[in-house]
Amino acid sequence: MNRSELFSQVQKKSSFLCVGLDPDLEKIPAHLLSEPDPIFSFCKAIIEETADFAVAYKPNIAFFEALGAKGWETLAKVTELIPKDIFTIADAKRGDIGNTSSLYAKAFFETMNFDSITVAPYMGKDSVTPFL
Image (cartoon, rainbow, N blue to C red):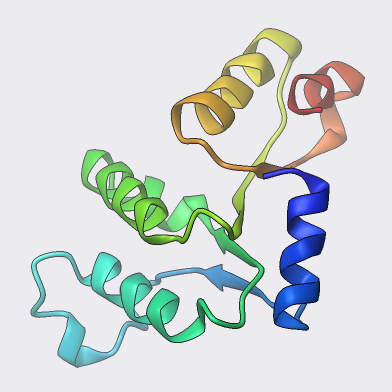
């Protein structure tokens, strides 16, 4: 999604709502814990209830990464649920030396098809440039 498409969503929905998806297993409602994938069920419920108002979704990658391969699978399922006309932000806080940042950018933009990613510029210009 590009800037003009995002702006169109803001106008269409009269909203700036960005929904953070931070599925902490310790805080998920008890009734979802019996589901085969409680984090997916939790995020699905949030997306279904907010899609008419949200112009962006921002999954916090740490909550998925902490679960290993299963968490990455869940993240993929969650991002598939997000309507294609809604902006996505990988809340990953990445930032490393140039070649590592390039691979993070490839992973999030090409493999996982996020529209944007949060970055940490502490390592300098080469840690941010691959994401631009």
